[in-house]
Length: 184
Image (cartoon, rainbow, N blue to C red):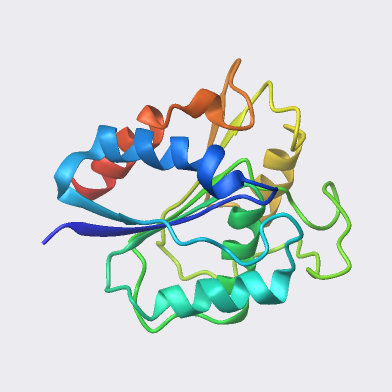
């Protein structure tokens, strides 16, 4: 049975079909048939709201089994992390992977909808692999946000990718390699 992966897209008009689909395609190519990727369309991607996205993510959790890997890109990563912190799912995730997520709170961005959190260690179970990837040439989410996540999730593995953009140049080979190593 293939390992389940839930990939939560980023925000922005046409992001699902013209941007993050390239990330999902790259991941699927790199991982092969041993992994089954779910890539749901998030509500109102051009004008996203946290509560609506959180509800969609939590609904997706109902379809997952123990060991499923949770991936969120950009705003989708922020929503994924905050949803987990607020409402832990019934299954046990195998890992949480965040790609270029904006940090909400000190050292990041302000949000009227997402409460800033300077410490996620209390809301994530001990031993859960959390990997955070960020390209050094990201012109959408400042690279400094990875440092804020380093403080908020001290056990996270930070993967800074020199020269890569917000979409990690549409190449998730590094992410796929790390996913395969988690299973080993």
